[in-house]
Image (cartoon, rainbow, N blue to C red; front, top):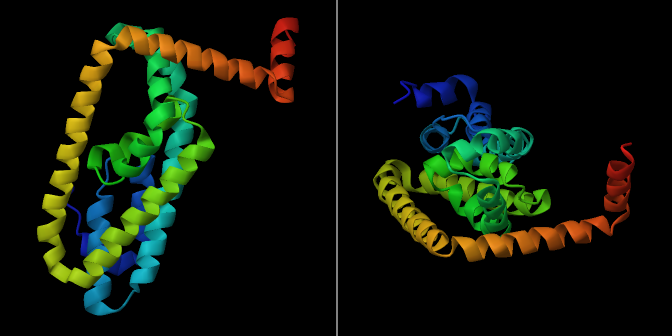
Length: 229
């Protein structure tokens, strides 16, 4: 698809190229991070010129840092874009509030399991930021997903050798199918109960804003807003 000689990249640049590519993939660019991780693990197993521990460590660091960069981009750019253009495609303010509510409830699952699905691996962090998923919670699930994914694919490819290609395909298809089924069921449930869920989202967000206003920082921001400071 990309026309890259993945093994050649690893041979020329070492394990650092794996972490770099995974960083930019996690940030939101469509790059072959998973394929490069497997190629680097196979290269480590067959040549011994790089260690699998360095490959996995660089990949995990790239995954976690890239996701955090994507989260920040989504947090900064996502809300204004959604507020301006969302209603044009049916994403009213109520539905956007509902999206933040659902991400607040289930965002951890999306971030963790999204690491194993190509599309979600690229955009999960952007979606988490745009939907105001709390950063501390995002960081925990992001780190768990990134470390588990890199260890599973890195050490797995290293131990299984070329046989890993026959296993990764079916595994990815299975995870993707399960994810698709969950998404379809979630969409159907949301459509059937949209009014009730929007009401719950409004109540939850109001409660959250009220709790935030009780903190010194929240009270200061409210006073500043009222005084125009």
